[in-house]
Image (tube, rainbow, N blue to C red):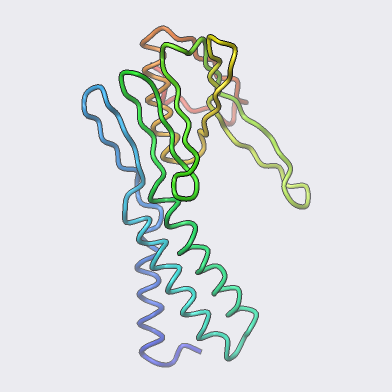
Length: 192
């Protein structure tokens, strides 16, 4: 299967690049501005890992077309979707408020100003996946003084880090923060 030195080199390179995926969140604390983003090595890992996986999939087509096709599709998704999404994900807390950027090419942007917030709740939403699987997603829900609601993701590692700092600042400013999540979902890294 993997007999030639070229194939072994591809495999070792893929393993090395895959080790970069899941790197830590980079935090920049510059006084009043606190920002978080993914380590660039993660985006590079997704990009080159996807290319490597697609290349290995092409090589596997000779003995298993299903496996090869699956690897090519997964590699393309890593290169074309996960790498840009990881690169553009960020969270920023400054003196005015909180800004969250996520999704493909950073297309989902939400922001809220501290002066407009009446109260904040941390909630867990339950949804059903395929075959009845239960999915849990955590969100920061900001109730605004004008009656509106802003909802921010709190599950992704970048959004969790930035969101925790946002909740600390809200507590310092006297904004009520209620944690309405079940006991097994609680974390206390945002509480003073």
